[in-house]
Length: 249
Ligand code: 13P
Image (cartoon, rainbow, N blue to C red; front, side):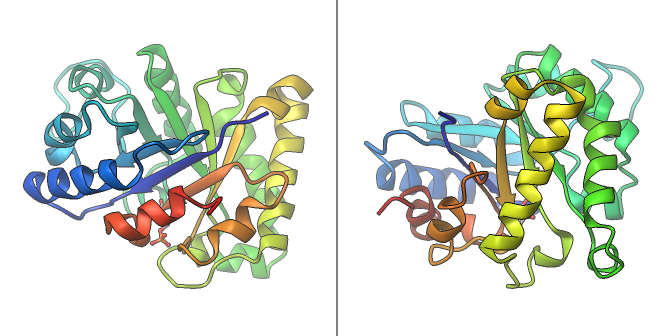
């Protein structure tokens, strides 16, 4: 059985102080929850405060991006060992906003995943089609390309988690229907089976992301290939994110 993962991606929101406050509230609200891994990914500047605030709670802390070199003359970049040194256990890679606005490609996704896993962290690697790609009937082709070119060298790692985030569902309030999510997740699992092995496909957690809210998480989680959520907007508020973590009711 795959243990569900509910991860919050705070994007470019919250100062260190705000992050610590929210995480303390969240830690209280999710106390005693069993059988689900809880992760919060604040901005880099709030990671240290977030780790401190999460101490002794089941909330794990992750970064939203990283650079693949371990150090060097790379102004503005943050290396994985630096993220690990803060006490973080996770790192998101390949988010569509990084692909869209910051030149992330399948090739850079591959290098970043390698760095994250080599440093002992868990990696949440994102894939997903744009609205234009979906309307052109290219959804499966895009997902297959992103998994094969970006993720395929890492699919047998137990520390790799895949997030399916249809770009048209991010921040739009338009959630993929449970049927659309299931179809994409089952397809991704099939690609993992072909690119790695049936065992890797059965083991890998595939999270859904895109307008996940307290009132739609349960039906998404009821789909056989949906193993969790990557939550943006609804993760910024501790009460709303805690409801998502408690999707079983
Ligand atoms: P929203 O939940 O705000 O749609 O964001 C999803 C997302 O991009 C999480 O990484």
